[in-house]
Length: 67
Image (cartoon, rainbow, N blue to C red; front, side, top):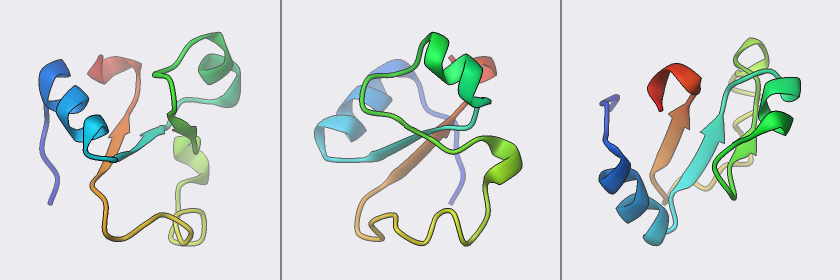
């Protein structure tokens, strides 16, 4: 299920162990990102690049437009 969340919801999900994925290009990710976020650039996001993600945890995907 895809839905938008606010900052407080993100923090609660992170406290519960959510996987946070930043889809910005690596150069922008390196300039600043949410601590603990994984970088999987949007152009690289695929079934193969997400295979290792834990399936029992929520997954939060974000970019700078969503902050």
